[in-house]
Length: 246
Image 1 (cartoon, rainbow, N blue to C red):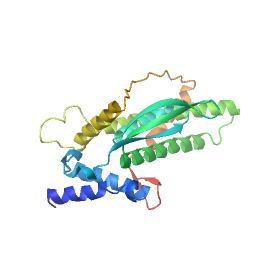
Image 2: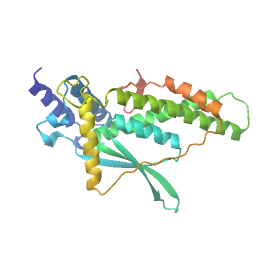
Image 3: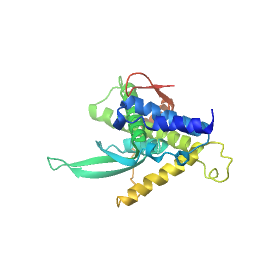
Image 4: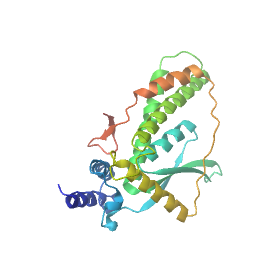
């Protein structure tokens, strides 16, 4: 397949967005295929000639729970799938403060990142429920241990996601034409595009240092061990939004 044929195939896949009538599942599958082709042929979106086929940068905002361990998963997962996230607060109709998370990136990337975050968070929740299914104790003791277990599990999972990102995005692979990984070029371009879009909106991101209190280190440690059992490589089956561990 010639380079022109590859570029045309990528352009066709990029056009498969929900805005153009594709289902969410079709858009996510197309986005993953684009990533595979870019990696395989060492290309970036900057190589696509028809700029109208490239989805514009935009954002989606969702109300979320205040569990910090979920924030760890969202931040690392979004970055792995070409998105940038930030959190804010809003007042709901009952004048209660609600935490929000915003995903910034291209539409198909936002859809994949959000679905993968949901997949990982649900996996941690299910693992914690199973771990404490038959553990004796008061409801408050079980909830405390379960919360620390989830923190440990999310910590381990986030470290693995971050390691996967670093493996294909090392500091020394941007220079030269012989780029063995392919994807890092795309990561660099997409991260820059997301940051430039945020700057145009007048949004300046800052890092936050949240102190995490571990009240049960045994439960936290066991959660870290269990976090290694969650599959990072997933595939989408025919049912929309359902992910299976590979």
